[in-house]
Length: 173
Image 1: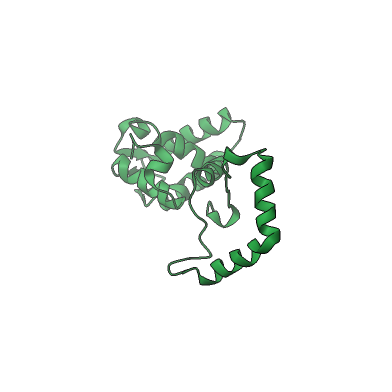
Image 2 (image 1 turned 45 degrees about the horizontal axis):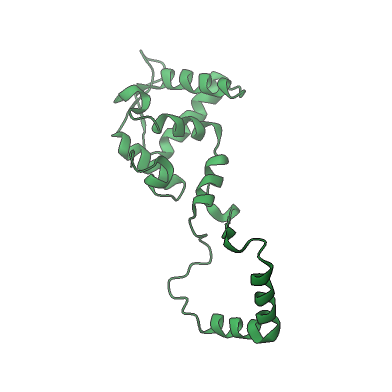
Protein backbone atom coordinates (compact mmCIF):
# COMPACT_ATOMS: atom_id res chain seq x y z
CA UNK A 1 0.00 0.00 0.00
CA UNK A 2 0.83 3.66 0.08
CA UNK A 3 1.52 3.82 3.79
CA UNK A 4 4.40 5.93 5.08
CA UNK A 5 6.26 3.05 6.69
CA UNK A 6 8.43 2.99 3.59
CA UNK A 7 9.05 6.71 3.53
CA UNK A 8 10.50 9.29 5.81
CA UNK A 9 11.41 12.32 3.83
CA UNK A 10 12.95 15.14 5.80
CA UNK A 11 13.85 18.34 4.04
CA UNK A 12 16.46 20.34 5.90
CA UNK A 13 16.38 24.09 5.64
CA UNK A 14 18.67 25.55 2.99
CA UNK A 15 19.27 28.50 5.35
CA UNK A 16 22.64 27.20 6.58
CA UNK A 17 23.75 25.20 3.54
CA UNK A 18 27.43 25.84 2.80
CA UNK A 19 27.67 28.12 5.86
CA UNK A 20 31.08 27.11 7.25
CA UNK A 21 30.80 29.50 10.21
CA UNK A 22 27.50 27.93 11.31
CA UNK A 23 28.81 24.38 11.01
CA UNK A 24 32.04 25.36 12.75
CA UNK A 25 30.03 26.58 15.76
CA UNK A 26 27.83 23.47 15.61
CA UNK A 27 30.80 21.08 15.62
CA UNK A 28 32.48 23.04 18.42
CA UNK A 29 29.28 22.80 20.48
CA UNK A 30 28.95 19.04 19.78
CA UNK A 31 32.57 18.35 20.71
CA UNK A 32 32.45 20.42 23.88
CA UNK A 33 29.58 18.92 25.82
CA UNK A 34 26.82 19.59 23.29
CA UNK A 35 26.15 15.91 22.66
CA UNK A 36 25.65 15.33 26.40
CA UNK A 37 23.34 18.35 26.60
CA UNK A 38 21.34 17.01 23.67
CA UNK A 39 21.09 13.59 25.34
CA UNK A 40 19.92 15.23 28.58
CA UNK A 41 17.30 17.21 26.69
CA UNK A 42 16.04 14.11 24.88
CA UNK A 43 15.88 12.10 28.11
CA UNK A 44 13.66 14.79 29.67
CA UNK A 45 11.50 15.31 26.58
CA UNK A 46 7.82 14.52 27.15
CA UNK A 47 6.86 11.90 24.55
CA UNK A 48 3.20 11.78 25.44
CA UNK A 49 1.27 11.25 22.22
CA UNK A 50 4.33 10.25 20.23
CA UNK A 51 3.75 7.29 17.92
CA UNK A 52 7.00 5.77 16.66
CA UNK A 53 5.17 3.87 13.92
CA UNK A 54 3.71 6.98 12.25
CA UNK A 55 5.99 9.15 10.18
CA UNK A 56 5.25 12.87 10.28
CA UNK A 57 3.21 13.96 7.29
CA UNK A 58 5.25 16.42 5.28
CA UNK A 59 4.78 17.81 1.78
CA UNK A 60 7.75 15.69 0.71
CA UNK A 61 6.10 12.55 2.10
CA UNK A 62 2.88 13.31 0.21
CA UNK A 63 4.85 13.87 -2.99
CA UNK A 64 6.70 10.58 -2.50
CA UNK A 65 3.43 8.71 -2.03
CA UNK A 66 1.91 10.34 -5.12
CA UNK A 67 5.00 9.49 -7.18
CA UNK A 68 4.64 5.85 -6.11
CA UNK A 69 0.95 5.38 -6.91
CA UNK A 70 -0.18 2.27 -8.74
CA UNK A 71 -1.54 2.78 -12.25
CA UNK A 72 -5.15 2.52 -11.09
CA UNK A 73 -4.53 5.06 -8.33
CA UNK A 74 -2.82 7.37 -10.83
CA UNK A 75 -5.95 7.11 -12.97
CA UNK A 76 -8.24 7.76 -10.00
CA UNK A 77 -6.10 10.71 -8.88
CA UNK A 78 -6.36 12.22 -12.35
CA UNK A 79 -10.15 11.74 -12.42
CA UNK A 80 -10.69 12.98 -8.89
CA UNK A 81 -8.52 16.04 -9.56
CA UNK A 82 -11.03 17.25 -12.13
CA UNK A 83 -13.75 19.66 -10.97
CA UNK A 84 -16.32 17.08 -12.14
CA UNK A 85 -14.80 13.58 -11.83
CA UNK A 86 -16.10 10.95 -14.24
CA UNK A 87 -17.74 13.75 -16.25
CA UNK A 88 -20.03 14.44 -13.32
CA UNK A 89 -21.83 11.11 -13.64
CA UNK A 90 -23.58 9.75 -10.58
CA UNK A 91 -23.96 6.28 -12.08
CA UNK A 92 -20.91 4.80 -13.74
CA UNK A 93 -21.06 1.47 -15.53
CA UNK A 94 -18.06 -0.76 -15.03
CA UNK A 95 -17.60 -1.44 -18.75
CA UNK A 96 -17.04 2.27 -19.42
CA UNK A 97 -14.86 2.66 -16.36
CA UNK A 98 -12.72 -0.28 -17.48
CA UNK A 99 -12.41 1.09 -21.03
CA UNK A 100 -11.42 4.50 -19.68
CA UNK A 101 -8.85 2.93 -17.35
CA UNK A 102 -7.34 0.87 -20.18
CA UNK A 103 -7.14 4.01 -22.34
CA UNK A 104 -5.42 5.86 -19.51
CA UNK A 105 -3.00 2.98 -18.90
CA UNK A 106 -2.10 2.84 -22.59
CA UNK A 107 -1.39 6.59 -22.54
CA UNK A 108 1.39 5.90 -20.03
CA UNK A 109 2.59 2.79 -21.88
CA UNK A 110 0.97 0.24 -19.59
CA UNK A 111 -1.12 -2.62 -20.93
CA UNK A 112 -3.97 -4.43 -19.19
CA UNK A 113 -6.40 -6.98 -20.55
CA UNK A 114 -10.08 -6.20 -19.95
CA UNK A 115 -10.21 -8.94 -17.29
CA UNK A 116 -7.12 -7.60 -15.49
CA UNK A 117 -8.46 -4.05 -15.70
CA UNK A 118 -11.86 -5.14 -14.40
CA UNK A 119 -10.31 -6.79 -11.37
CA UNK A 120 -7.97 -3.88 -10.65
CA UNK A 121 -10.66 -1.22 -11.08
CA UNK A 122 -13.20 -3.20 -9.04
CA UNK A 123 -10.81 -3.56 -6.12
CA UNK A 124 -9.85 0.13 -6.29
CA UNK A 125 -13.48 1.23 -6.26
CA UNK A 126 -14.17 -1.06 -3.32
CA UNK A 127 -11.25 0.53 -1.42
CA UNK A 128 -12.95 3.89 -2.03
CA UNK A 129 -16.10 2.47 -0.46
CA UNK A 130 -18.02 2.22 -3.74
CA UNK A 131 -19.59 -1.18 -4.31
CA UNK A 132 -20.69 -2.44 -7.72
CA UNK A 133 -24.42 -3.01 -8.24
CA UNK A 134 -25.99 -5.37 -10.75
CA UNK A 135 -24.60 -8.28 -12.74
CA UNK A 136 -21.82 -8.29 -15.28
CA UNK A 137 -23.79 -10.53 -17.65
CA UNK A 138 -26.82 -8.22 -17.95
CA UNK A 139 -27.30 -4.99 -19.92
CA UNK A 140 -24.58 -2.46 -19.08
CA UNK A 141 -23.11 -4.88 -16.59
CA UNK A 142 -22.24 -3.84 -13.09
CA UNK A 143 -22.55 -0.16 -12.26
CA UNK A 144 -21.31 2.07 -9.47
CA UNK A 145 -23.56 4.57 -7.74
CA UNK A 146 -21.03 7.30 -7.11
CA UNK A 147 -21.18 9.46 -3.99
CA UNK A 148 -20.39 13.15 -4.17
CA UNK A 149 -16.96 13.97 -5.53
CA UNK A 150 -15.91 15.36 -2.15
CA UNK A 151 -16.65 11.98 -0.55
CA UNK A 152 -14.59 10.13 -3.19
CA UNK A 153 -11.70 12.56 -2.71
CA UNK A 154 -11.87 12.09 1.06
CA UNK A 155 -11.76 8.30 0.69
CA UNK A 156 -8.83 8.52 -1.73
CA UNK A 157 -6.90 10.87 0.57
CA UNK A 158 -7.66 8.65 3.56
CA UNK A 159 -6.19 5.67 1.68
CA UNK A 160 -2.93 7.63 1.60
CA UNK A 161 -3.22 8.76 5.24
CA UNK A 162 -3.41 12.34 4.01
CA UNK A 163 -5.76 15.30 4.16
CA UNK A 164 -7.90 16.02 1.12
CA UNK A 165 -6.27 19.44 0.71
CA UNK A 166 -2.79 17.83 0.72
CA UNK A 167 -3.75 15.68 -2.27
CA UNK A 168 -6.21 17.83 -4.21
CA UNK A 169 -5.39 21.34 -3.10
CA UNK A 170 -7.62 23.78 -1.30
CA UNK A 171 -10.03 24.45 -4.14
CA UNK A 172 -11.17 20.81 -4.39
CA UNK A 173 -11.05 19.98 -0.68
